[in-house]
Image (cartoon, rainbow, N blue to C red):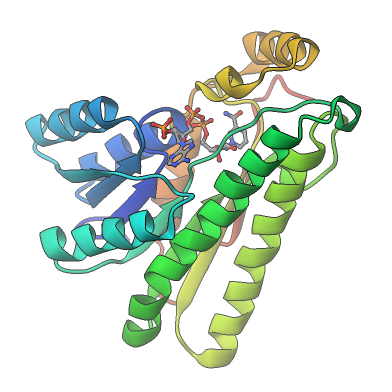
Length: 247
Ligand code: NDP
């Protein structure tokens, strides 16, 4: 049971959970393919992994663009000879009450958190179907399991990807393709995610919560590592990750 030599595409790899996962997986011998929009961050991370003896490559990727995901998967195959896992992790969380009608932010969350995941799924599905094997890991949220005031659209996107992962798991069983899906439901993890909030009240509330209970993204990275390391016929499909201080 190991992630060694697995080729893993990671979106949202330029910070937070994606970055921590890339570091941990690469340190255990996985070949990581990093995608996000901030090139300097990706370059720095890839260099660091390589300096530590790991294998990493990167490509500037906007998950809202299907062609960017296709190109990221093509890079994985060109550079490392195949694709075993996609970690759909890129996301934004500009929360606000519905009554504030921040409709541009609603659409942005749907584009990144939902369509971005669909674009990742579409990019790997031809290979996964052909090879009758593959793993799709997606970062949902505790807001994808229960409703929170202020998280209407964010939660809607996270509930949606939960459903998507479960349906792919069921269809894989029906089609005998051995495609595994894992949904992650983190609670308060200290990353750059809160920078995407523009609503003053929402930002203050979240900042306070995260400052008092938040844990590091390494907690999620360890779960990703565990899920990838499972044998091919074992699907560990759902994980919640809470700080012990968070009720
Ligand atoms: P960060 O803000 O640190 O990371 C978000 C990542 O998503 C960045 O790498 C960012 O890179 C990338 N991203 C954003 N928009 C796009 C885009 N259009 N195309 C490609 N990449 C994009 O936050 P987290 O690490 O916390 O977030 C990772 C995931 O975890 C998200 O899906 C989030 O919803 C989820 N999550 C986080 C929780 C937390 O408490 N932190 C709790 C529950 C879920 P760049 O800007 O360079 O493109």
